[in-house]
Every structure is written in structure tokens, then in C-alpha cells.
Length: 543
Image (cartoon, rainbow, N blue to C red):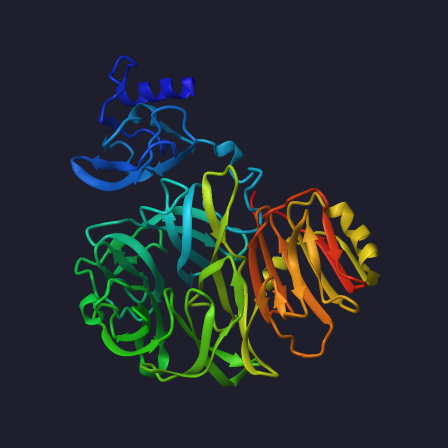
């Protein structure tokens, strides 16, 4: 720390004799990154960046005046050569320093508790995935992000891209707070017909639709003409200010898509007690159409074929908790016909699906916020593994199913397969894999004398099937065959996160990995049979 402090003093002030209790400093930006020390022993205070006399951003941060808990960073590459003034309502400016690397770069993504299969940002907090859209071979994942701390605050839109939904590259923050407030959740589309006038048919604009959150919540738009790398906010924001109509501040999380039959844009927006539907010809002027009660936050609305038949489709509406309704949609009104049901539970929240995936692919792919911690890491939260959503006919009617995308299979390493095992035999096969940080375990388990059974890892029940109470990991579950004594599981275990898929996607459960001892993997239950077992270690998604 002493070495870093001396470097910081030299870079920022020119000499070490400058007063270190300064609340404002000015420097010329010569390096890509500005590294900032964070301490959770201090209170949040306001920091502002002024570049060439104009305030570029402001945020709150727990700036460390002594030993930091960890470091965060600002990418200043776009401002190289310019004069930056940093003001702060507290102490600690003397430890900020410029560098060509992020502090801790050498160990990044190799940390002990860093997820190796699930996307996580380099530093800071994440929550809801936002703006998930496919364009020109890239999947864009935006997300609620606090770049300056591992706790919620300063909501920006973080941004990452992938060509295979597996390996991700984190880009700079896409949206920053402004006079309309912080950048809350929303969605993104590609305006191929240039209805907005922001781009052209040769270079269509990517449009982000998001909630500006301050004392009230309003809906805003921004556009990008360079594949989402830089963004311009619409000068006439907000495009919807409906708080007075609903007598509430809770009007947020717009999800927008193109509705072909009516040749117009549709927005589904959470307002007070449910989801409202708006329509627009140009993404700027919006008309209120209808409202469905019974949901809270992060709305979704999309059409899926039933059992893969494109001639038989239903519309799915859901909210942040994962409960959903099935029904009809005419472009203006969603008519619920079945539900509410649930298809997932545990640590997942605010899941969103990609728009714009080519028809030749045809999948509806979802990612959710995984509400888990990573011990001793300057990061909080991550994303669930991408899954494909489908509608299938069951004994109870049409239901939503959720399964890992096929691309995850490419991460599997050579493992073992076995059949017709006792629990003891299966445990012996699992024993050599106790130290694998990332692993996939598929099995079919048959109960006999047991009323409950499952699979644990280091004392934590990853699969806990209570046949008597009809529960999977504490959540009610009834198998397709009501008299069945079998349960099939697809379990993907990461360093801190676990994704579980039951009976070919009938139910998905997400949880924090929390080992309590060193027992390794153990099947438990009285006289159970493991009818099939497949074990595959997994490769990391990070280089």
C-alpha cells in the first residue's frame, strides 16, 4: 500500500509534499484506468468528475483514506489527454492513481470464490439483467451495475457481449445516471426499419429503453450506432411519465419488442400492481393500451410454440419472481387463460429473455440475476446460466419448461457414466470429484423405503426431494407421473453458484454453494437406487 500511495501522490499531485487531505484534485489523464480504493469502514460520500470544465459524472463511494478493502476502477480511455478534476466530500483522494491496468488485474477471474461458469462483472455490484438483445452475431447482456462498490447503489447499465452465450467480454458501462435519475432496469431492441430516425436501414440503431429513477420513475430511451459501444440519450426524455396516472412511484422496467402483425412496438411496463401495455410507432411517442394485475417488477411477454408446433402457440407473461400466466395477445391486450404457475425458484430473480435472436435459431433464451455472494471478492451477484424456455403439454396442461442451453455441453470434460447403482456405489464414483470447482452431475434417483432423499455436497443439500411433502428444496413439486418414485436431476455446480434442473426442465432451482464440511458428494436416503449417473468436470469460461 505504501508503494501505491507514493505512486498515487506523484501521479495526481506531482510531488509527495502536497496536502493529502485535499477534497479536490486536478490531473491530466495519461493512463486508461483510474483506480479507486474502497473501504466499508467509511460512509458513502459524493464524488464528481469534471473534464475540461464540464461535469462528466457524479456518484457516491466509500473512498478509503487508509487501507482499502478492495479497489474499483474507472475506464478513462475516452478522455486521454484531457484535464480531470476530482472532487470528493471526504478523505482518501491521495490514494487514487492512474495505471494501464486495473488494480488486481493479474488475479482477476482466478480468485478462489470467482464463478467459473456464471458471468460476473470485474468489480462491483450487479442485479437485474437488462437490454438483452442479439445483433450482428453478438449477444448483448446489459445489467444493473454499481461500478464503485459491491453493494447496491449508483445504478448504471453494465455491458458484456458474447458470440456463443458462454464466453463473455465486459465492456464499459453503457448508461450513466443523469438529471432523470439513475438508470434502472429495461430492455433493448434493434430498429431495423429506422422507425425512430436515430439510425438508418444501412446502420440501424440499437435502442435502450430504461427507467430513470429519482424521486419519481420515468421511462427513457438512448441509442447506439456502433453496436452498443457508445450511447446517446434522447434529448426529449422521458418518453413516458405515468406516475400521476397510477398515483405511484412504482412504474418501471420496460420490456419492448416489435409486434409484426400490427407493425408497431409494444412495451410491457410494470406499474403499481401489475403489467401495463403501451404501443408506439417510433419508440418515442407511446400510447397506453391495457393492464394486467398480479405481477411485480421486471415484466416479460413473449410467444412460444406448444410442443414445438409453430401452428399452436401461446403467450407467456411473467414478472420478477418467476410466476407466469399463459394466454392470448392481440398486440394491445393480453388475455390470461391459465396460471399463475411457477417454473423456477431459489436465488434467481428478475430474469429476462433475449430479443432479436434470428428465426433460424428460434430459441427463447433467458438469463436471470443470481442473488448470491462471493466471499472475499470485490463483487456481489452474478448471472444465472443461460437457459432455453419452451412450452410443453403436461398432465396438468401446458407448462413452461427451463433447461440449460446446448452450448454449455461444449464446456464438459471427459467423465464417467454408470447405471443401476446403490447410493454407496454412486458415492464411491463421486468421491474423486470432491475437489472439482466446477462440475455437472446428471442422475436419475429412485426411492424405495425413503420418504426423502437427495444429493449433498460438503454437508449442503443440493437436491432435497421430500416425497411426503412433495417438495424440491423446499418448493412444492408434483411429478408428471403422480405415483412415480423417480426423480431426474441435471445439477451444475460452480464455485459459489448452483443451478439445478428437475425432470427435464419442469422445475429449475438456483442457490448459493455453501459447504459446511469436507464430506464431498453424497447421495442420501434409505435404500435408494441411482438408476443412472453421469459426471463431467467443466472447463472455465474465462481465459
